[in-house]
Amino acid sequence: VQLQASGGGLVQAGDSLRLSCAVSGRILSSWSLGWFRQGPGKERELVGNMRWGAGNRYYPEAVKGRFTISRDAGKKNVYLQMDSLKAEDTAVYFCAAGPSIGDISYRGQGTLVTVSS
Image (cartoon, rainbow, N blue to C red; front, side, top):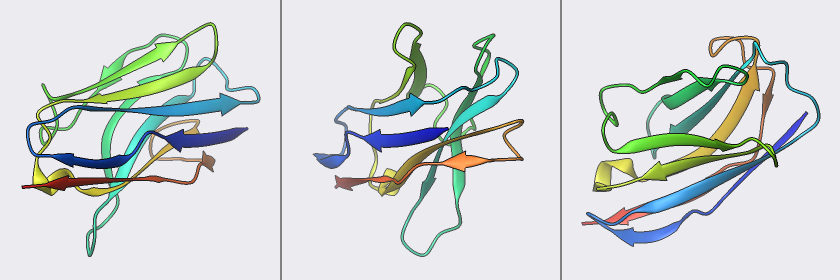
């Protein structure tokens, strides 16, 4: 399994940005795919995850209502739509997959999102 995130860039506070995660290889329908971020000097943080087969989604409070995960089922692409971006959303974002969100087996290289205030 390989995952590759893309779509990062420099935006202003309040803007929107959509990240893409290209997935190759086989992911079991029971597995979870999540988007994580790591800001400068911060710990890795989950910003959303979904079950690959069922599509149930979870978002932490920090991004709930602003971030949305969607999946292009036909092409195995997963997206992270980020709206109303804040300076504190500045981080390297990456996608990862595994049997559960706490048991990540595969992660891709990240994409940098910089939000200027």
